[in-house]
Amino acid sequence: MAIRPNRKRAPHRGALFRFAPRWTFFLAAFATAAPATPALCPADHIDEYVHVDHIHDGDTIRLVDGRNLRFIGLNTPELARDAVPAEPLAAQARRALRRMIGPGKRVGLRYDTVRQDRYGRVLAHVYLETGESIVAQMLEGGYGAQIVVPPNLWNDGCYRDAEARAHVNGAGVWSLPDYDRAATRLRHDDRGFRVISGRITRVSEARSSLWLELDGPIALRIARNDLHYFDNMDFAQLVGHRVRVRGWVIPYRNSLMMQLRHPLALETLASE
Image 1: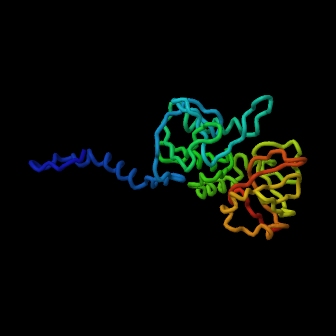
Image 2: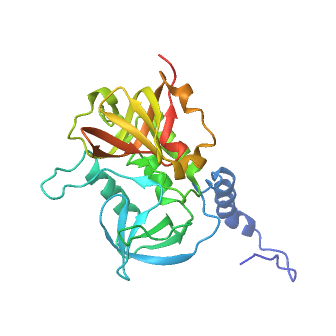
């Protein structure tokens, strides 16, 4: 409530002195207060507010209404499952997410073009009530890597910037010596999400796809349906250049294959 001067009589001698310390403290606090930090990768709108029931892992949660939700733009290390050991920092990623949105927490969902994946999980960009992007915070903390799955491309540039800060600082997964793995060090039994660096040795075309072969037991496939995202990139010019790619490694014939669906999954590296 605003303090108004008493117009009926002059203040008692000493009244100003009694109020001065309180106002001095208030003004000093106001003068030294840091400006509000802008929200990281803010949403242009929120489609729905929901409550969290359970944290499955660093990128998947269950809502109180029973739906499972997969975060758009983020892939964190896998927890142990079916006798397969946990990947490094998987537990840390889940704990970091739990600190932000534990059970009962209310979060906002910003939907994209596709709202559900093939497993029936809800797909959304997820926000704290303060406006902070949970995906951007997880990426900046190094708890996972950005993934880009068209046509859900909203905010992809901002997510990449958040990941880049973690990469430069060597935070989280980017501190692991084998997270960004050389193609020449891949094993034929490698599976799952990988970040791989290697040199393109050959480019070839097939009826339904374009293939980029690396200097290791893996080839990169770009479906013709996704080529328009690459903005007429001259792939032939990439032969001999080093690249960093990301995606899911699966067996293919007697080798390995990774499908690339967007240019953000293919980064050209500086020549050695």
